[in-house]
Length: 259
Image 1 (cartoon, rainbow, N blue to C red):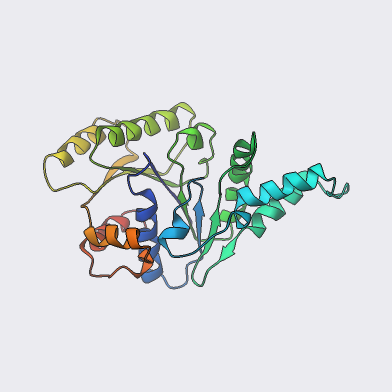
Image 2 (cartoon, rainbow, N blue to C red):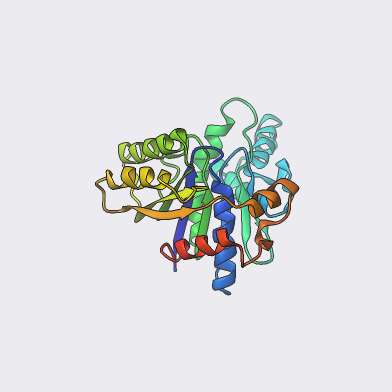
């Protein structure tokens, strides 16, 4: 199994939460998978959701800031290429957990730093993916991630929308941008998060039905969960969510379609 799955959508729709629910599902169903989680959002949330404190110096942004200082102080060996050093720094940012590894992009520091991180991230995803069975990516809320073709190695794109005009609008813009920059995916899945069981679901279903590409599919809907909201607010590890949770049970049924 080789899958690179990216969760995208408007900020606040629950991308990070859903990624962790998929991680929980994978850890429970497949015992021997090599899994990498990449938090590509500068406003990183994955560490908080799984109860792992990640300091800036441990992120790609932190490594790039240190690298920039080394260049300014002329501490870079002349016989080693800049690309080799950058790749080494990024690999050093890998955090090994008990059952999976995590790589956090972190915020940019200084003018131009954010674009530089994005450019290296494109290459590093290709290299890292060869060592893992499944890579889960929490994409930034903005469209720059796709317009720069950072997601060009992704096999499955999961676009999350909440029941709002802005959530659906962002979903449609992501579809437009990925087509404009000719990003190719095996599947694009549309997932409605925190949708009540009423006519609001019909609106998203119609929007997806209007998309002509066969690889764009409605994955399904997950209702709001007070239990998940409470765990997020008080900072509990979402991987410890009860397997009896209705939201998790629904999520598992949907994730089976992807893996």
